[in-house]
Amino acid sequence: MEAHLGVITCDKCGELMGKEQNVLVVAEGMIVNSDDEIDFQGSSVRYACHLDCWDGVEENE
Image (cartoon, rainbow, N blue to C red; front, side, top):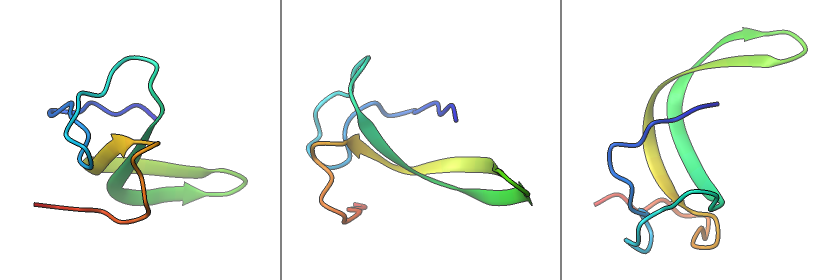
């Protein structure tokens, strides 16, 4: 999956996200096909943060 973020700061800590950092992305979209693999067509990224910052709770301001 490839995602393009308009805002490149972590939604949890506010620091910049950079190349080769592990991140968690919550995307909104639709499953368009499901056989042995699931084809997902994303419409937008709802949330993105550093993996180390993730505590299981989305924070939307």
